[in-house]
Amino acid sequence: MSTETTDDPYLDGPTCSMETSARAGTSRMNAPLEMLLSERSRDVLAPEHRADLRKSGLTEATISRQRLRSVPPDMIGPLLGFDPRAVASALLIPFPSPTGGFMDHVRMKVFPPFTNASGNTVKYLQPRGSGVRLFFPLATLRRVLTDDEPLWLVEGEKKALAVAQLGLPAVGFCGIEGWHVAGSRALLPDFDDLLLRGRVVELVPDGDWRTNQNVERGAIRFAEALEARGARARLVVLPIGRIA
View 1: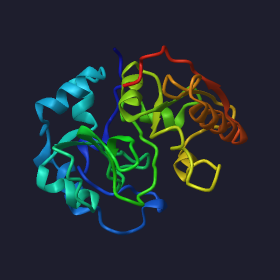
View 2: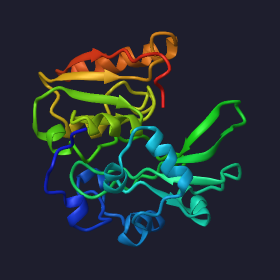
View 3: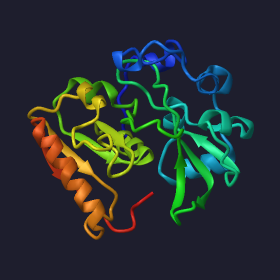
């Protein structure tokens, strides 16, 4: 597998700085998140979490570069702002900012998955009301932001990282509706950092989009929103059963 070799400010510069875009504001990063992103927490990864990442095809280099790490049990509640009692452990998924540093955005995969009061299976958690952001794999970030080659928009952070490992410029989105805020069909502000006009965008929803009407509807709306910004969107069909 190939990855892009670049001067990486995420590895060589400040380890836990806030993103520098105007969207970030001036507030300090969530203190528990800042600590987990620091060098003190480097390579803190439970065997169960490492096995999950490797099962998704992620290399040790990707795991380290993205600062994927286990959350100490006593920090899960402070990070989320509530106590998820059904969660035994959690894997932090830091969100790099396209403008440098990391977003003040908390998202984690929980172990084991649990069923909520609505009867839905919960695999990921984040603070209530924290909204959605785009996920930027670091391996191809420079090409994502500055080149006009085809861009891969991939549902799911781990799948986006796996695509970036192949050397394809990739950005992740979280869920089939994770490209817009509630009540709007306009693209998230994070899309403002991407060169879209005239660019081919390979849109990769989960493999169930052709058999699930809700997913299909969201995918088509997403493609239409991209085309409204001048992109040339193409829906990619994944083999059934390739949903990580």
